[in-house]
Image 1 (cartoon, rainbow, N blue to C red):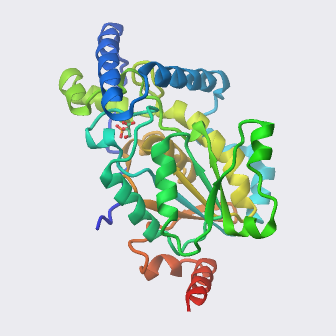
Image 2: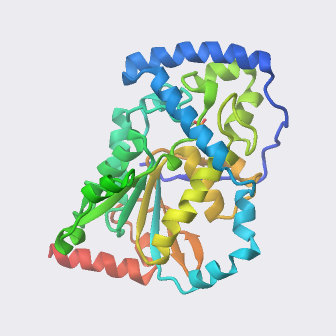
Length: 345
Ligand SMILES: O=C(O)[C@@H](CO)OP(=O)(O)O
């Protein structure tokens, strides 16, 4: 069983500081278009145009709404005093982050980005295994990206949860959708977990790299260039989002929508992607743009944070459902687990 989940060696990578040139950009454009459509026919059955349009749409929204402040600025901004006062009074809440299980394109080592690609067989197994690991941790709300691999990971994981609540999708896209997906009965509310899917948690848009093989791209453009596209903070891949751009929407979403729920004591699971989660972790752990370069997340491994008195504390990852360590961290989690034991006996 994999136990190493969250590798972070700080400050080891040097950024190379140059952007791709436009000739290479065009060349990449042609080959990725071919590869994307081919992979779609084989794996996903969606048209390349549909994906491309939706990515472009999202990207223009991101560009239009992007705040100039960096993630780090948000963390340390003095104007947040009021917010941090109320944070200090907050209840304790659990926050589980999980990167989706392996997808078909992870398996093939292709750049995926915001292309909707299903889980591989191994990815399904990883999601179920992840569910076992968090089966004793309370979950009151689930946030996922708009992509199926993240949604499936969350749902498959919840099949293993001992509390046996049923995840129910909340539709936030319009007034009518909200009304139609509302649950009225208090009993049903207690037995269900609202699920909110939002594109702002999507994987970062990899632009013209989407659909290309990572190894072949490195052979062609150089390992260092590809590493810069994949891991630098502010250098976007050709026509795609940098981690910084991804953070501008994913972290803003986290702060606007998710953090208030944590503040009110709700236990939350977020099922999302390598880079959208890296940007959120950057915010939670106050990593610098240099430190985040070496942050790598494995597929299908849940990470647990405790939110208390305005602070996020990483608690590592429960290695197994029976692993005592993780539940000993807080009294509240231990009590929850005890209640689950009592329900069974
Ligand atoms: O291809 C992608 O979309 C991402 C995540 O799978 O890859 P990387 O780890 O290179 O950012």
